[in-house]
Image (cartoon, rainbow, N blue to C red):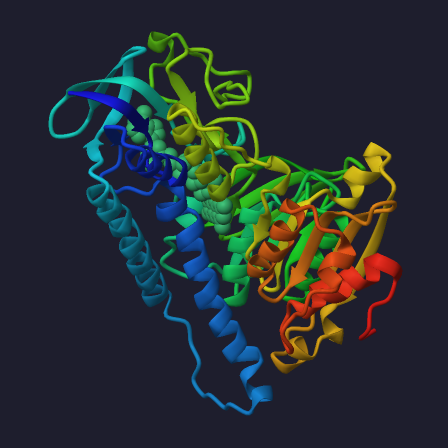
Length: 465
Ligand SMILES: Cc1cc2nc3c(=O)[nH]c(=O)nc-3n(C[C@H](O)[C@H](O)[C@H](O)COP(=O)(O)OP(=O)(O)OC[C@H]3O[C@@H](n4cnc5c(N)ncnc54)[C@H](O)[C@@H]3O)c2cc1C
């Protein structure tokens, strides 16, 4: 079989690239080693984690807030099996949807591990039969896998990664989380809300490093309210399973040894690019010291007909970044001139309240020596937030001191994940803080807080505080 384009990997990068290639008239195939399409995001990432975050937030609200709303419930309990079952249903519907999209766009789906024979030939192993396909061009979208520590290999029962944390058969009594990045904070929230004691052990001096510091601080505050015990500046030195118990040893910044005992330990120290079995060398390719495939500004590898996108290349490991890159490569191949503004790829943490950011953090602006203004607005001053008892958090807008152009928007608050889109649009069109402040925002909405923070950034003239 001979194609114009073969996409290797069916995550959000790969399947979106395949659809756009097909839309542009290219004869396209997609190769996926698992029998289901959708990759990490749809099967063991974004979608299942959000399903469990929603379920657990319903429980948490019923337990802690319904009474205040005047709703009395008795005998509230968690049915973790049903919660996981519902999550499986959501995943199935979503991955079936991708299968449908492949069919609709006349994209051939090959199941099995794709392995290069040369730069135009791919062998597909592990499916019903071994197949060889040829293609003019390839897009590598093989994604990533959870990282582990040299002394802490997951046994997948008690020492787990995010993948197993999405399939637990019981609510852990005590969940120890190594790593305070977004995946750890999201999955910790799921089980913290369902009643687990959650202990976080993190090497850095703050949680969610990389996010604006104000956001990290606020998030830590709300997660503490949920019962999280944070141990920052702690270097983990050992993780050992003893029967049904897991013992984590660590050293704090003063060199003092600490021991944490729980019944589950989630390793969430990041993700690493995945290229195992691809046989990159046969195509003339290799990976860098971090295991990533190197690409140029057009996402082309050093081999002329091979592109790479998503988690397997540099940049944020996010589904929507992978999607944008998939579209970019398809359009570049078709001779178009697409663009991606990497500075405007939003980042979201789906805790409650949610955290969402786009553009520069305050720390980055300071480091660059850029002159900026800052305006904030707390949700406790928002009528909409008070109505739904979602008063934790704030919006912070950073704007250029001279021109008033918005440089960064950071939100921790209700529906921040959806609200950040307003900031992305504004920044894509290079709006000033005053531009947004002068636009009518429906009342009462959470988005009024963005307007107020923009007013604060413009000339310190927020109205409702
Ligand atoms: C718990 C969790 C929650 C997350 N939540 C979010 C979120 O809310 N928002 C967000 O933006 N991102 C989230 N992410 C990150 C997101 O899942 C990834 O950034 C995204 O999936 C990357 O897409 P991709 O297409 O590059 O690769 P992947 O989705 O990893 O897909 C790669 C695919 O390639 C296949 N493959 C690999 N090698 C081969 C081969 N040789 N032959 C054939 N097939 C192969 C794999 O089986 C896989 O299906 C989350 C991740 C995790 C783990």
